[in-house]
Length: 127
Image (cartoon, rainbow, N blue to C red; front, side):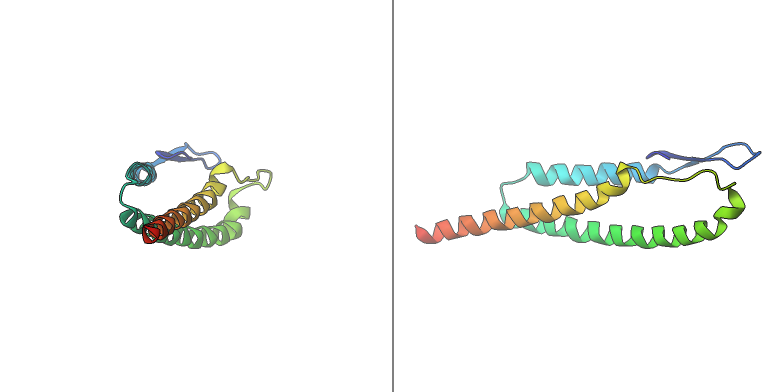
């Protein structure tokens, strides 16, 4: 599987390919929104709101993905013995951990934006 296609094979059958381009569209959209937030650092109120929006949206998406993943894991663990010979095993790749890294980076970004905003407000009071 990559961001554009899902290819799967069953024993003694022709490999099947399913388009999953919506993953690529979601990744490009998330990247564009993150780039927009990084390059538009002039208005800190809007930056804080944008970071909070990204954090809420990303948390909802990750929660949904976790629920779907757990459901699919249960389903495939029950059906796994029927579909495979038991000799192949899957492994977690780096993409599995990227979602956690993205959540952490978004949390840290919103925290540092808030800290910077508070520092600027405190300096205005001293004038």
